Length: 211
Image (cartoon, rainbow, N blue to C red; front, side, top):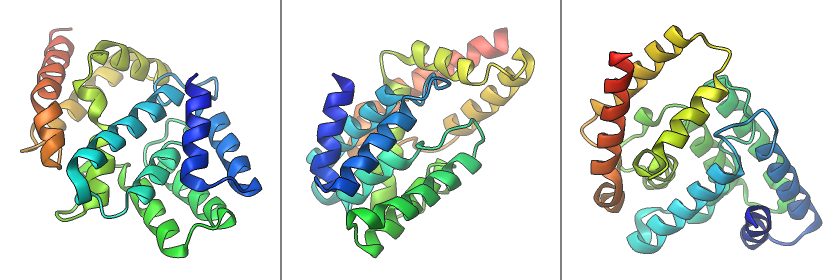
C-alpha cells in the first residue's frame, strides 16, 4: 500500500508523462534498496505526510510546496551512509532527472538546493521558508511514538561502525541538536513536536552516557 500511495502521490506531483512515471519508479526503487534500514520508503512517506501537515496548516509558510515535496523525494534518493556526499549526489540526481519531466529550471535549482540543505539542518538561514518546512518534516521522527524503532534502524545502517565510536558520534549529534534554541523552525512544528522530540533525545543521550 505504501508503494501504491507513493506512486499516486508522485504522479500527482510530477505529472503523468512517460519521463515522470519512469522517474517515479526509479525513485521508489532507490528508496526500497535492501541495504536501507531507516532511509526507506516508510521514511519518505512520513516526510511527505509531515510536509502536507505543515503546508496545509501553515498556509504560505513554504513559498513553493511543490519544490519542497520534490526535494523530499530526492533528499535521500542516493544513500550509501556517507554524510554530505549522499546529499550532493542526490541533488545532482535531481538536477539531471527533473528537467526531463518538464520541471522549470528555477524549481529544479530550488529542489537541488533544498536537498543539499538536508546534509546539515543547522545551516538553515532565517527566512528560508522552503528549507524550514523540509527540515522540520525530516526531523518530525524525533517526536514520533516510534522513536526507539528509529534509533535501532539508524544503528543498523551504521552496523559497520564499532559500538563505542557510534555511541560517541551519536551522542555528539544529540548534544548539538539539544543545544539549539529551537529544533523546529516553523511555529506549527514547534507546537506539534518540540517538547516530545527533546524528551526523546534527552532520554537517548542519558542511555548512551550511562552505557
